[in-house]
Length: 591
Figure 1 (cartoon, rainbow, N blue to C red):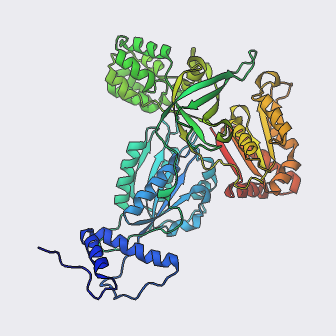
Figure 2 (figure 1 turned 120 degrees about the vertical axis):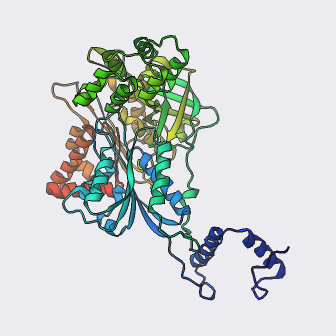
Figure 3 (figure 1 turned 60 degrees about the vertical axis):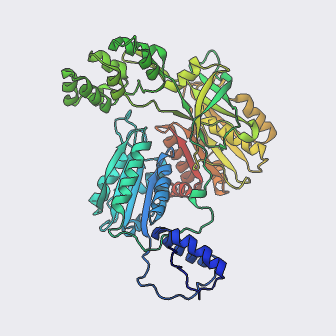
């Protein structure tokens, strides 16, 4: 039985064209036809051609449902998930708009209608650096009412910190307090968030979808050049690299150990950029693994030993870990400890082995798997430019060693690299892009870089890149560490850069070389007039390193520079630096 033709003979097509169109449209679903209708209308609009007159439809097409997707991100995870939400939402008939908290105009929120907020927590319960301004405004008494807004919050965090997902929790409560309606319950996710985040996104979009099905509606089509589906993305699949250089940058008399690690990609380096990070998939300390196996009576389980070496996080101790331990083991004293309210204080500076020794119990491999989380990769700023090093990537890694509660401790990845990785060894790695820590698009723009200790890593990449591209802009580096003779990382390279002009100026601060401690922020104070002159001339300012103290002290020094040099009030100087941040001329990569 032949199918009835969809197009009338009076349609402005030849017989063969009409037959092809009938075949294509006849096999299409209603959603596909609706999409094609919107696509053709948008195509005409994009080309400036007026749409041909057509009979009025039986019912007017319904506009796509607007959806605002807010993200507060430090390492890029929240931003990546916001992009995922946008792609899925557009396919479901939403008209998504992704907004960085750094760019949020709070006055637009009451009209947003439907909002998904994805927020990371940084450090001890703080918002990501770029989100501080908007977050503060939202939490203030001046925040607008959000009556009529529907929302859902996805919170990212790290259970190794006491204030787990604090920012997401605070946003969730604040939206509700301002009158918004929670459309979907908040999820608080740890570092292994991929699967639960995907599930949450699916549920949230379903909850926020219009009450009526979009059948027969026009699906939104974005005709802007370069849609997000077309954006080139660096592969997130881990690859194996070979260690080709492993050098301690500190002298033998230093009390620090900083490894310069050069890695070679067998099939060519991925498309990383200066400012990106490289994640290393480390292994745990075999001695600590054996200690845990002995304490649990599981020393003979080789399969478990292998899993604890490479797959499970055996150092992190959080309130969640203690609760899981008490529940899995049924240990009465451990349960009383959880109920006592003393866990948060006790776990400070302790690891899983301390918990096992305090509450001895018969454990199984399943118990340990339940109590621990997957071993996450560790990210390190890339210290090289592909334009100079080719199919290599360089890292600058400080070995973390310390002692607490009578036990020697060490950083999982840093000491794995320092002690157990040699030339010829293999590592699993993957690139972690950071598009918010980038060189200026105009190579003639001057840059000021502040990177004490291993914070200097991305600036080595910046200088290499500008040298390789012969960028005419000037580069000024502030570097600091403890001792000039023992801890001046890449000293000879900086001297060469000064000679070839890829570095115009360097100011150093070695805190322990004189009775009074001198830091990079002190050098900024001393060079305040020139710092302001560079910034007034359009320079970009970059900070990399410690978030808890250094980054805050450096920012305060830049505020003071504008106060003293331009005679501004502290409030006006603060506003000036905030404007640099909004213009993406003051960028931070802190940890």
